[in-house]
Image 1 (cartoon, rainbow, N blue to C red):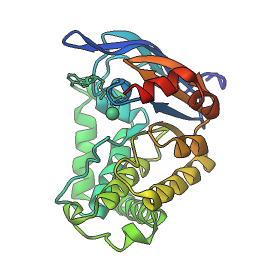
Image 2: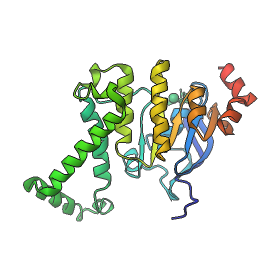
Image 3: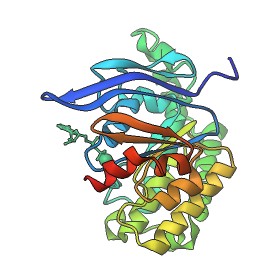
Amino acid sequence: NNPDQPLLSVRNLGKSFQGLQAVDDVSMDLASGQVIGIIGPNGSGKSTTINLICGFLKPDSGQISLRGRTVTGLPATDIAEQGVSRTFQNGRVFPTMSVEENVAVGFHRRLEARRPFRRLEKWPILRWIPLLTQTWLTLVPGPACRREAVVERKAVQSEIDRFSERLEEHRTQAAYTLSYANRRRTEIARAHVSSPDILVLDEPTAGMNQSETAEVLQQLLELKAQGQTMLLVEHKIDLIEALCDQVIAMDGGRIIASGPPRQVSADPRVITAYLGD
Ligand code: ADP
Ligand code: MG
């Protein structure tokens, strides 16, 4: 593994919807530990870019690679298995599941992904081997199983604790009864609990008030200090400046400026794109 190799590399990505070019020739490199922000007016192609990278949409053109291996066009589950975890612009949680259960789903994702011989299971005959192992594990709930359950409970609990007492006091509550901000906190916790290589956040503070936004910023700064690589879409320029190493500004599906946050937010093309919206 080349240490200089970017974790994520995107080249000349393109996607159109019925003739509308939503993403047009987008390229970027995301290094390990780096935080990149994507800004731009509504409809400029930010979410589509994220959806392409995470495998929720297939690109018409261009390449995406993770650690130098091409993943272009792979389904979302494969991308997630390769360590890319995301949240959605509209904040998706499982409404009837508790906070704890929602976060546990994110942890299970990781257990799935790290199952040994995962790749070999694509071979029909070899598919029986993990099935037999799983059957054995359910028949003999031995130390391996118990150990896993303990690890899960600890991981979920510490993830919820990390997100402050505001989430902790609602731990066993169904997600649909939560405030909007707590639903979004739950979603970020679910994405982060799997220790992803890249955490992808689509407008994590959209619809939050000033103090809620400040709190999320604090949590993301902590993650950054721990070396978490992140790609985030965000409108709040204060948050972008506090958090991001690099910023990409989009308009009409294209990158119109990129570089350090202060340079990009002062760019006349970026100012025009926002004011012209
Ligand atoms: P942003 O996240 O920057 O607000 P999007 O990436 O969501 O922008 O959208 C970019 C453009 O693509 C918009 O014009 C939007 O209407 C269009 N678009 C996004 N997703 C779809 C889709 N699934 N089908 C058709 N058009 C879409
Ligand atoms: Mg969007």
